[in-house]
Amino acid sequence: MAERDWAEWHLEYDEPGSLLSRRLERVQGHLRAELDRAPAGDIRLISLCAGQGRDVIGVLAGHPRRDDVRARLVELDERNVAVARQSAQAAGLDGVEVVQADAGTTDVCVGAVPAQIVVACGIFGNISDDDVRATVAALPSLSAPGALVLWTRHRKPPDLTPAIRSWFGAAGFREEAFDSSPDGFMTVGAQRLTGPPAVLVPGQRLFKFVCR
Image (cartoon, one colour):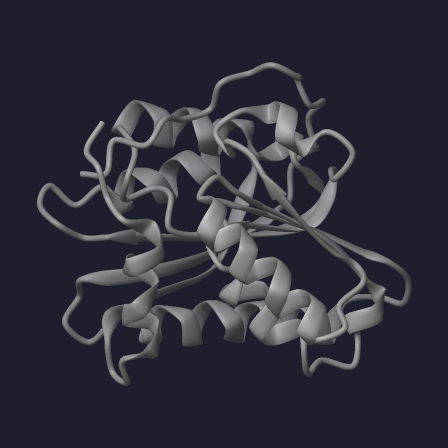
């Protein structure tokens, strides 16, 4: 597996106009809109490979539904976990749990799913095509009825996004948005589960990072 400094990787988020900062803006926009339209009551959220939690914590910190959200953020890098925990604590987000673990196995989801919101950003561009397909196929087992799944992927040749979108359809999802950056390189997708949820299978390996 290729080595990458995942804490240093986050520095691009702080560069105005960078791909990561633009991706963050779009992901947060979809998440904010989903919270706005969520019915009254608790909202379960799970974020896989959550990094420093910017996708989720950056929205919850100032959202009126913040206290309704029960979120589990799963991240392997201990430095990013520390940053995420500090950020959640500083924002007073008692409902946010940051777990240091491998998000590529279903075991990390036990007790946090079925979730109304599943964040799978920063994953599909770093794993094999077969693992992308397997992960999409397993997402109904992480999802509550009508759940929203947010995902991202680059469009380096060969562009896998058409296949990913078709795999979501086959798994029982309806596409609500597919945002592409002006240069066509970065994409953010939003998929709504319209088919039946599935039962979570503990111990299932979904993906392994190859950092391509």
